Length: 351
Ligand code: NAI
Ligand code: MG
Image (spheres, rainbow, N blue to C red):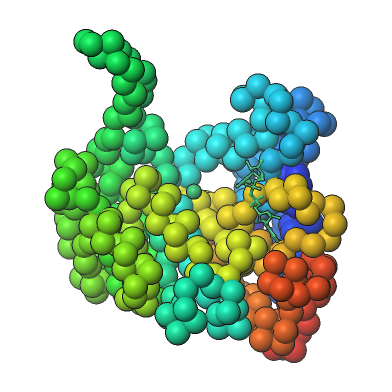
């Protein structure tokens, strides 16, 4: 199995270094790593944020572990040369259409959540967001109305194949968890949502063990704050998923805790922390590497069929936190490599 390591810039290389140390400490057979520059680091080396050798490696690899991109030195560049184009380019070129974002609160961090601790500790959900369609990719433009007023428009559309393939990811994700899937739409108002709901119901017949429910997106936003413990897996479109996943992430205590996966239809995926390159703390050893370490665990589970090793890493992160490991974002003083050490020590003591 070939793993592409794409550290990127800012704190990306710092957090990827720790994730690689943890993967090495788990001692997995048959994994080969190849590293390539991406984002600002690649621009500075070769004049392009996603060089063709990096894209080739990403295409050849079985999975990609990505740090972050967003070097402020590149802020003045034209849009197509900006570091952020690298992640957008990878998602598009590799057809990564399914974005998985877990929202889980480690009980030790309950005090850091935006929700009351007794509500926050119930959160253990996964949002499956469609990533290649919806209003972001429809026809868009600016025009003048007959009476000369400016009018902007963005067409929202989904076809049934797009809905079907993300619905399958939703059901399969629920199979691997608590067997409950909530499909979120706005079927009382939108035609795209009516199609979404019809197709999800069709696909449900292939997954008789899954308890399927439907919820309107406005109600879902409310329920995520009122009673998040009711959700296991949520499947939704690109726009609704963008908003709901950011909302759900606020329960986890810190942006430095949250992993993500972006998957294609064959099981290949790109795994990355949800945070960016954090230029304000880059190079200072302050970054929390746990989001990237948890992204590596997702990679083992979803692309490499190594669920047991993924469980080991997640358990080691929980033990390290229980033992008091805290980087600055969690209110502590530990450095990026101290946090990596703490997870590796927890792995060792779990035997
Ligand atoms: P950011 O996520 O980089 O930082 C937001 C705040 O959270 C900062 O105060 C930062 O210090 C803190 N933070 C982030 N990750 C942390 C960690 N692991 N440990 C401790 N503290 C952490 O978002 P921001 O500042 O809006 O963007 C910075 C750059 O990153 C921009 O160029 C943006 O475009 C890019 N970006 C890249 C992403 C990616 O590579 N997928 C995703 C989001 C932003
Ligand atoms: Mg967002």
